[in-house]
Image (cartoon, helix red, strand yellow):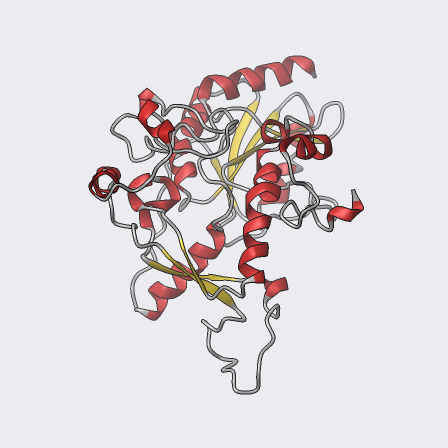
Length: 324
């Protein structure tokens, strides 16, 4: 409804679960987990941070939670997106050249960055800190009712074990709140200022075609695809924890040599996805994102929304081939 003024859940237009489901449907969390997170978590939080003119806020994130959090700093500066740079009123005395000015972003403090899971619970018990009783039942990370399950036994001993039950089956271990690309940009700048070498993690995929801005369209429009061939295309960032976890799966898919299927990947860390026929055909909101491209009977590009597992993707490819 137009009165929601930009999908605002927090501003009072939606005050109950039933009302939310009437507006967005009861299954939004499953059909579009990114948008669900946006309207229930990201937007409300940002609204309050802005309303309170927040200069710094505190999180409970830890490196031991794995994924993108493995390189978490105790103190971070989250820059506002370009369209929000001037959201705060500035006085003549403000230093316009100050990269950490409050008009350009806000500080984020992660005091538990170097704590382990066991250290957290030792402190909780020793100081009688109130906690959600679901932890006593075996849950290790708690979010919404629909997106919280028990941790996966297959990840016992792994860094991602604690959060492996979050967004299960929805390809999500992060909620999209913490901008991956902004962090990489800031990290690179920090390395350059310190005179340190900028090292890009290597994700092995020997039989994948590595695309760049110059070769992307050539491959997508390749005449070889205009018969019965398909292109499985991954958009990724080598710094992304989920991409690193998925890399062996993509490598296996490429090595499996699926009949008439080419496997390629495009690193979006510092590259823009080229437009196809002047249209932004490939929509990437998180990584890794997979698309299937074909030309029979006409051009199409379909995003994959299932589990990022070998068998699930192989089955999807088989079904798509058989349906064409």
